[in-house]
Amino acid sequence: MVASTTSDPFSVEVTIQGEPVAQGRARGYRTRRGQLGFYDPAKSRAWKETASLFFRSAMGSRTPLEGPLFCLIRAFFPCPLADHRKHHPKPERPHWGRPDAENVAKAVLDAGTGVLWLDDAQVASLHVEKAIAAQGAEPRVEVLVARLPALKTVAGVGEVKCPAVQEESV
View 1 (cartoon, helix red, strand yellow):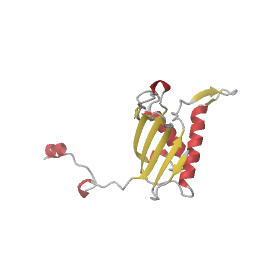
View 2 (cartoon, one colour):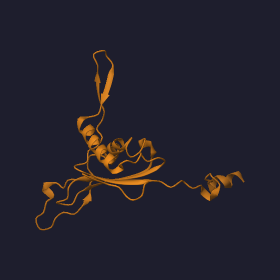
View 3 (spheres, one colour):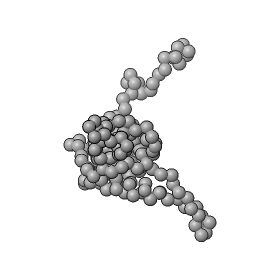
View 4 (cartoon, one colour):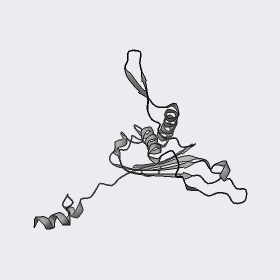
């Protein structure tokens, strides 16, 4: 597993080697006293703990990023053995099967909470890609996080005006 940081103090790049894991559905149970409890499935919990370690390594002594953030997640799944070719190796290609992209993102966002950012609600722009890794390439998850610039107001006024609404009021 590789953790690298950029020279920019407001961004971080991390590559987590290993097969991407989607956030599983919370499992419920009833205690002896009749109360309900919930827990993360073991596979999701283990992956998030591992990812969190690599996020910590990438951040070093820096504090979690503050303000609105952009997050790019690229999840590379292993190339199936049935797709292996001896003379013409399969290249990287889109992955459109399960798990869902948003569940992969949920696992990454949960793992980054308290390490990359204070709260995953700070991620104002999120882009998720799923791909099947090229034949011979290892499965992995690449994460890039950067601060978003301050949002500028439209026309310097501070609010967006719809032309259709303006015409009606005239």
